[in-house]
Image 1 (cartoon, rainbow, N blue to C red):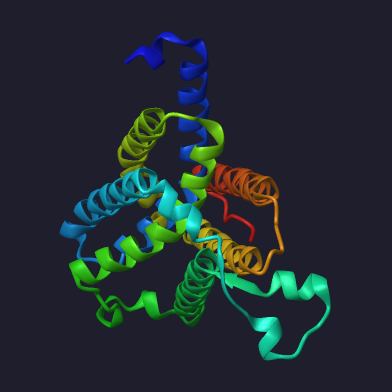
Image 2: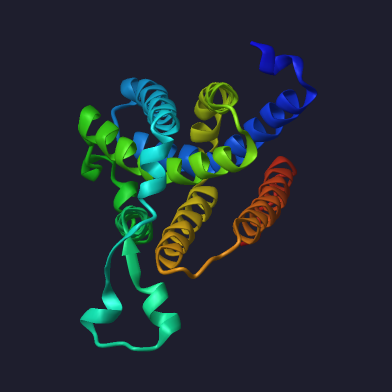
Amino acid sequence: MEIFAQAESWISLITLTFLEIVLGIDNVIFISILSDKLPANQQSKGRRIGLGMAMITRILLLLSISWVMTLTTPLFNLGHLFSITDADWVEKLAISGRDLILIVGGLFLIYKSTAEIHHKIEGDEENTDNIKRHSFWGTIVQIMLLDIVFSLDSVITAVGMASHVEIMIIAVVIAVGIMMWASNGVAKFVNNHPTVKMLALSFLLLIGVSLLAEAFEQHIPKGYIYFAMAFSVLVEMLNLKMKAKAVKKGLKPKD
């Protein structure tokens, strides 16, 4: 416990906890959308277990950080398969274990987001008789698989921000605890507002594309993505407030 006698340790803990919460926003949104497919009496439990699995996954990755670092070693090169000789492209097409995880996770996010957007546009959710309820543990498995992808960013960030594993683990536990506390409210808000849910699905699609780009060394700064998310959410909040005000006055809100 001597590390907590140093001011630097507390600064690292606070900063890392904040970053873990920010990086976990997409995880909470994804879990909220997936849990909405469960029966109503299992949704809250599914979110808690999903976030609990996320915490366990991140802690296990932190404890095996030396193994995680080996995931950056190239396994094969797509450039050689297509006889590409340009040095820059050969470097970008070198595929490591981390890249494979990002590719699979990115494709899965794109598929799930596109499928959900399709269901909403086609109006499948309007008829409650046609809503397909997913199995509880099937949903948990999907959450766990995506947690691994989302956890890579968190673990890499943690390693860069703190030198003590204890601080990293405490930051993860605090961040997940806060997300568990907020998850029910976030899920209820997202699922009760169709436009917000569509916005959330669009951002999950964007995150899936950014994961694919990251796998091929095309770095998209996370700040740009999160700023776009925050700005869009702010605009949507203003729209919701305007519609609520119109309804209160007995006026028909404009589209």
